Every structure is written in structure tokens, then in C-alpha cells.
Length: 149
Image 1 (cartoon, rainbow, N blue to C red):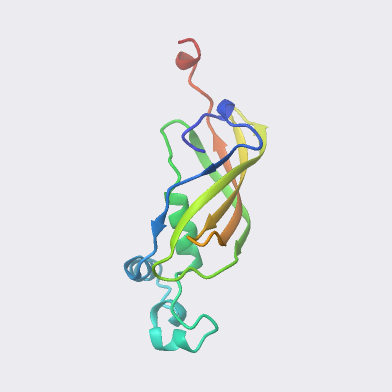
Image 2 (cartoon, one colour):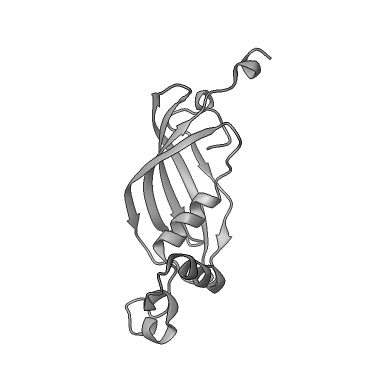
């Protein structure tokens, strides 16, 4: 989505992006950066006692990886304005491959460009939505020199 300018996006546009396989290394590094060493993510023996029966990736790690899979071209994104309705709907296990799917829900003009509200679902290889959110991005306008070309 964010490889396009505001005027190139339309309500209803939907795109699917490439995936990444979540590994133990991702989880360990995320725990190191954030300080979140909760046993469900880090302790295999503890995780066996949970309803998941194994360790799972941090929900915020999955959300972050999903964001990182979206192409961002210079000049398109002015600012990330926030997230709403973030839901962690299913566990992401080590070895799961996730990918984001985005749909434009709304556009509101705001110079230069406008605010785009997007529904983002992050799916695993089984097609299950593991994370869902509404995000608001301030997307830039096409530069004047490109309009006249």
C-alpha cells in the first residue's frame, strides 16, 4: 500500500504481501530488545503447561514483522498516526510463516495528501488470522514535478 501516493489509493483496494517465517531467533531477539521474557515465549517447559502446549511468538513481534513486510517508498508515508482495534486472534508458533493482507477502508484529505485507514490482517500459512488491526497512515501526495511529467 505504501509504495503508492494518496491519489493512487482507493477505498476497497486490497493487497497481499510476502511472508516471513517466525523463528526462535526472532523471539529471543525480540525478548532481548523489549525485556519481555514471559515464559510462554521463552520457557519450553512452562509453555507445555499452557493451552498452547508449546512456546508462541510475542503478539507485538508478529505485529511488528507484519509491518516490516509492507513496502515503504520514499515520499509516500508522511507519518504513522496510530492503531485501533488491535486483536491477537490466534497463536503464532515457531516455524509459522506469516504475511500481511491490507485493505483501504477510508480516505480523508489532509495536505499534503491524506489520512488512509487500513484494515491489516496478518495470516499464517494455514490462512488463519493471527493479528488484526486498523491503522491510520498519513500518505503523501505525488510531487508536483511528477504530475506535470
